[in-house]
Length: 350
Image (cartoon, rainbow, N blue to C red; front, side, top):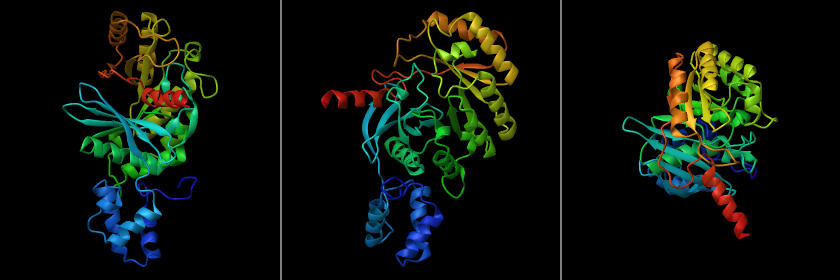
């Protein structure tokens, strides 16, 4: 549901579809047909559900938001990576990224409009948190992205705008539907949940007892360094974050990843690399290095030599490390930047 009281067709459960059909005095098989369009054929537009009678298609469009969102802007990099700005029913917007490689297609999805964490180097939280996404909106992202790509993704990563674990009720329902064989049927190991280190949410995610991949946006090796990057309100001590992540690893049986955005003069020294490697080894975690995309604040990206030295030091220390493959965007490269550009344009036009 949303505040208008009109439910989203994307995210409607089998029970909700059955109740809708019963209220219209339709046979139960119609609910199964609708579900097959939604979760088998990834179609949320009633007018495209060709084996449904016209009156039922009209009733679906009247009763549900179907869809409530649209692709308002699209930027495509030379390597085929596409960034979408998706406008929601209330004219707020989010971002989704479609990342193709020769082996697989990955969708990077958002979970909130804006972000309450407010990392000082990130455009996603530049305008604060506007609201949570509903389950239906999160799933609509997936469906609209699939339509844009012309195919279903192999992997889904929730690394777009927002801290999904602060929207746990709606986000966890989306995760359940994505991973349930009765709905989208994704293997949990093909779904990655990213968190800025929201400890209560990490522990709740563990209680779902599903093998989702967990990525922790650490960005620092001690609390003093992390305080320079993440405001006080939602920043937990690193020891507590790692303890929660270890609990997740034990409960879900999945090794987790430490996401580490490299920022010049802040967290990119060789000595810091040694400390990061020691943390990863102690907690049996992987490290993913992310050279900064300039987006917010006065932070700068390290030069190539510094990045390579940092990565080499970690590898030499015996920790598992990768560096995020960078995409050739000429516009809106950083997370949340396309949305931020749109907001600034709206402010200028007022």
